[in-house]
Image 1 (cartoon, rainbow, N blue to C red):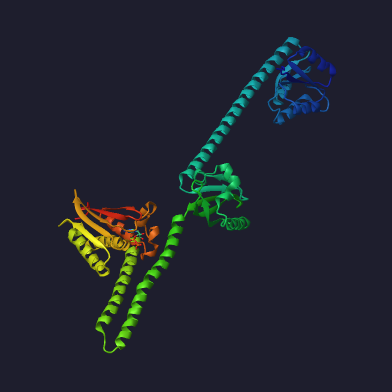
Image 2: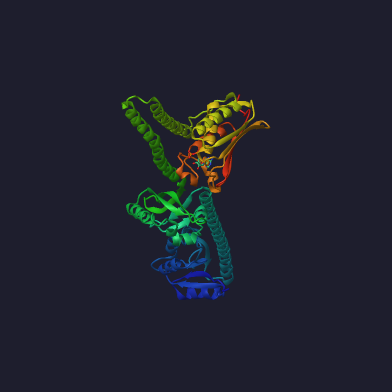
Length: 512
Ligand code: ADP
């Protein structure tokens, strides 16, 4: 490392004065800078840092005192030690003037080389120590700054990590774009859903959007960017990477703006609304099915009335014909009534207005009555056989009309979906402290993928399209059974038949 020389400024208008100082102080430790006037000395002091100034007092234009005063006035040189070199007097007044001007010492001519060298050495030593302290202070400051910077970076990283953790812990797809709409971030939920990495998503995000929705999405974006909106939303279908299926999402995009109102980024959340869309679709198809279902009995009523009118004009009046025509009309009004009751129950379940009022009742009687009334119905069409094995006097706490509704629904379905001359077996027994009702038929059966579906509103099994029905009976039945703390299950083989099993606790907790 190159040795750092210490600057000493020698100020004298006379070359011999400078020469004397120079010859005494010559050393490979000092850099002796010479100035032949006060002005020159001031200029040198501006350019460089000095450990000491040795200055002749008597100089023309600007003497040593004046120069010293000016050196002290400057911030940079305020504390540079000044030793006056003088041949004049040692009287107190004169010396005092020098101290006022900022001198730290005096050297009187003729110069004593030893005194000069030792005085200079003391100040140089002081300067070096000061410099070392300053260097150490500087080092400390730098270290402190570096530590502060590291701390700041750490906390920034930490908050970024927490932001990402938060974005990953919500069940929404979250993403961010630049002010120009270029994708910059996707949360883990997005990557898991689309099965695309962050970098792949940045390039191929369009692939995630259903092709028919893409032009509309791009147009919405372009308009929002142009108008610099605070927020906007749109719906589109996004591809689920694993299944390749498209699901509906509601996308909310919010502008992140700086203090001046400039968009810094666009934050987007995509919420899966497939369920809602499906329900909307189901409701629409429900309306069309319901209208269709109502039209059939209405048409029957209308033709029964027309036929009755015609019969009334006949003479003599054929009472038997009239009775059977009116009976058809009457049956049709029953069907309409049943349908309307189903609608009403459905809306009550959905709005939480259907309640269960259990009272001690004989379940065996309820099941027997349901079986008998269904037997009467099928007797008139003479096609099916119902065999019933009902254990007597099973008394429990049930809402009798609602439980009857469940049995009627299951038994009615067994009849509706059975072939001509099929067999239906109804069984009611007590197992531990439960009653178990099973209804087995030899009907069309239900395929395994439909088995769970049929307890949901408006869901019908594939093969039942050409049978009348709305697909809400089992939904209401399963709701009633659950409200009784019971359970309803189904097992089935397509083409062979189905078995519905309802288990009800005889004394459910919470019921008196
Ligand atoms: P629906 O009025 O359509 O019969 P439900 O809610 O009672 O409505 O039944 C839902 C669906 O379950 C039916 O549409 C039918 O596809 C299927 N299902 C119910 N019971 C049977 C059964 N015994 N055999 C075959 N399919 C049945």
